[in-house]
Amino acid sequence: MIPSVVPANCNLRKRICEMEKIQIINELYDSIYAALKANSDLKKYVTNIYDYLPKQVTIPYLRLRIVNYVNLHMLSNFATKVRFSCDIYTYHISSMLAAIKHVGLVVKSISSETILESNCVINQHDEVLHSTINFDILIQGGSDEQITAEN
Image (cartoon, rainbow, N blue to C red; front, side, top):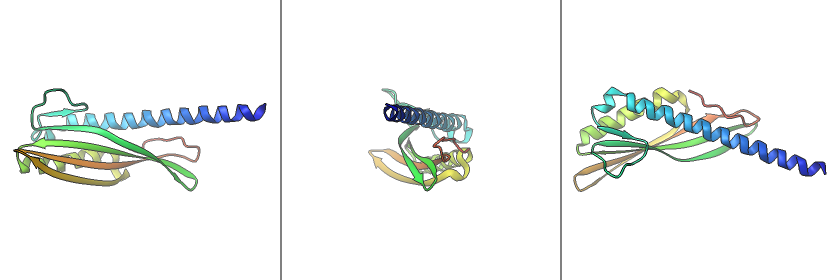
């Protein structure tokens, strides 16, 4: 009878840890989004910064989203790698490059050395330039899988 109790407790603990990870990821997303919206230099190049895409948008704009997250098991420690993505739409390449620079500075200021990788792709459709910036942020955890964001 005792063996059946242990797996139930383990499953409950895993679900709680998973919910805590999702909460921390959400808090990190909210802090990045708030920092992007508060950045006056970025507002010179994009008129709107969205966390969701409304039916009608005004170009130039930026949208932040979470692409995915992966749990990493590193010897005795745990971590979560979260991939964020920023889509930027503008009409001018100089505005695009300036917006990319400011997004990078904002993300760097929030997560200091935890950025694992970032990349950017720029393309054009008709007269609108589109850029996608992907960046991976590592959220360190402990040996008991208690995940805490390092800011």
